[in-house]
Image (cartoon, rainbow, N blue to C red; front, top):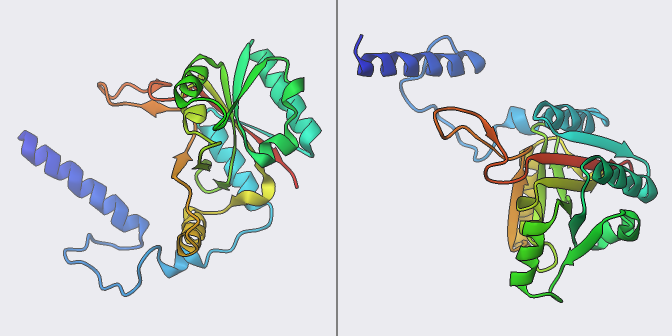
Length: 235
């Protein structure tokens, strides 16, 4: 079998697998008629139990080597982060200067040197602080149960470097902000666009940084943090 024939065989196997997953016996040779845009109706109409988004988020993030701690209030959230920092032998952390993060997390009790990402400090200095920090701590606007993903809205007090440059990223969120699917977040963003209230950038992060670009060899932490841990405040 030639290389081209082998590639076509692999492609046909892949397409047949997709067709089987969609309940089709054979692969379509023409585009199906479809009047709707976005996710199909059956996907939008899925029903989820009250605890299911959290359970999905926890299991999916942990399957990607992440950690999820569920706490009851800000004091417990602070204690959990303090414990993790101690386990990591961390000496410094950089945090978003976010109202919710300041409300729940007492940075004076973390036991490490802390800095906040805000407009009071030059961008160059903030990036250097993020590069040197052992841990970056952010607030999560929305988390997606179906994939274990967090959505971070970036702005002048919530720079993306905090979640990208330190080797460990700790994401803090309210349980009420965990939604079942990506389509839920997309609908929220469409509403915000109509109101002219979109953030400057949005990061969708699913577990630690990973890549298999080089000879299909999985490497962790090449393009971002080695660790992605989450604290969920059960509000």
